[in-house]
Length: 102
Image (tube, rainbow, N blue to C red; front, side, top):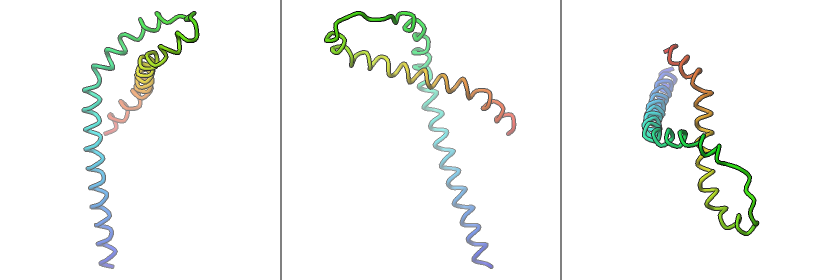
């Protein structure tokens, strides 16, 4: 029976270490998000004007192919920011209710 207790204690110690590591990673991620927040705010502030400026492009295919990489480098980060902001907006009510439970 003693080895069962030792095994249980070992499991608790292991779980505690795992939780501490997870907490440290969460803190580091939170700090990184805080640092990136100002950049996201800047991009988010510019998105409405960029969205209103988008209109159909009438140009020859060769001309569009030549600038395709530039367009992707501009649109992909903006779309990623939009997805992050959209997910943050959806998660805000649940995160505030979970902090009240603690």
